[in-house]
Amino acid sequence: MSGAVSTQQGAPCWLVVTQNGRFAYTANAHSGTISGFAVGTDGALSLLDAGGATAVVGPGNIDLAVSANSRYLYQLRSSGPITALRVENDGHLTTLGVVGAMPGSVAGLAAQ
Image (cartoon, rainbow, N blue to C red; front, side):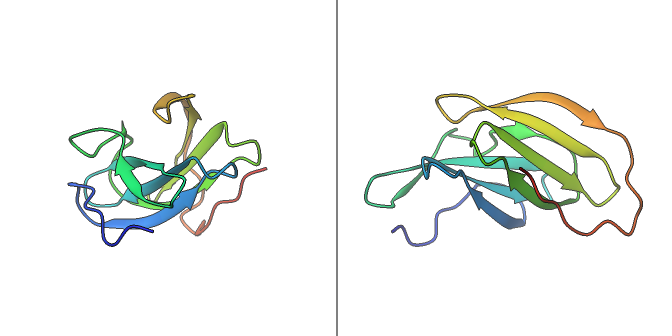
């Protein structure tokens, strides 16, 4: 397993791993980005993108969830919207859309 791996972004605060164990993602709250990592067979992490940002989603990332089939990643921002992203075969993310504002009391996210 890797020691600390810099995302080169601001305030990484949440981590999820795809169910197949191939990729990991952090929500960077200050930068408004998601960083992606390839997970090696030995557990070592390596950034998917040299600049550290695999997707730009907006500030205030407070939660991430990955679908059971490892094909979709969902991101919740503190202002309420949820961004849906597709996990491509190489681990990069494609934004599919944003669902409007959720109540301000929403504090977590789960995916099927």
